[in-house]
Image 1 (cartoon, rainbow, N blue to C red):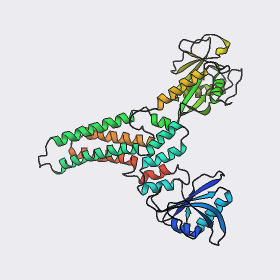
Image 2 (image 1 turned 90 degrees about the vertical axis):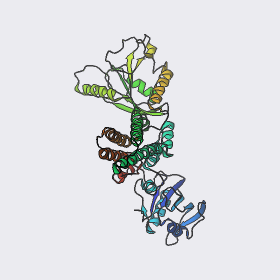
Image 3 (image 1 turned 60 degrees about the horizontal axis):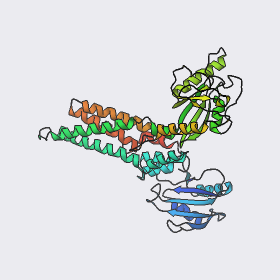
Image 4 (image 1 turned 120 degrees about the vertical axis):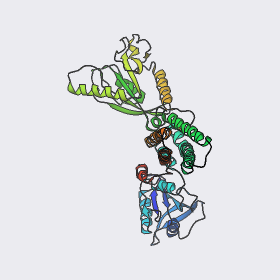
Length: 428
């Protein structure tokens, strides 16, 4: 793969004033010469006329020529800052194709950066997360991971398991050398410490994954209690049809909002009641299922009515406060029509979203792939602690080290590369 040269539009396909075309590979310098007739100064922005093989001027662009290995991919690279019209982009792409370059596959630039040692797999995944970040909290988490904080965390565990494995191999290979008992004692202490740290990392409530993917808050309650009115007020747009007729909402409606810097999907559900209408009954079933899976349930009851006796945990909210009537004990009284209590509700929801995703100390888990590998490593470390024979302990230590190494890509990565990079956009 590294024997060829790739190009892609890195700035997206939407028409804009400037479009950035990226080139990477051993033929990048030759491609610049073909377009500009000579190489511009290294790592200096130079204005050049771009021409095709016939000498036709395609565009006047800013050209950045960056020889490897000190580039994003570790290869010779070029950036062409073109005028953003479709005709210009297509003409330059055609000239690059004629020069022997090929279009990049999704994620291929970052994949090459990994293969050339410019980043590990955890940092590569963070590049994708940073591009997909919708909120400031997501940006901070992805940037921290991209800077290597999470990868360094995993590398430390891998190195300590490797050290333990070295002690274990010494005990296996030199059984007659009367090695001091401190060797095995140190081995077991380090093994137990790493396993405890991995267990604490796994037991984080999925905060990093929740921040990356977003939370789900379900709005439930009896028909005509104001669920649709509330979701419209929180979203600040008309998401659901509001009607005085009970049972208007029969399916699950969703909308995305940001609360406390965290992306949250608000889910409007069908009114909870017994019904003979098969369509409405299906809506009620889906509403109950959604509430069971939600990170937080907003349990609505009309002011003046008793709290629902459904045993569902969540935030109790008394709606339609503008019509009078007290709310149940502990309920937050609001009116989505008059605005009473809405600022308090938004603040409560933002606090809840932050509490579910904020972490202190080491960077949190952010991907299911990491969690699966660490669960496997933890199982092997537990087996190593309980192993009756030194050879069995050594094998479990090797398997644990390999599982941790798969996270950063330092061990056994061939079978997971396509899974990771296939989700990237073209040009990244």
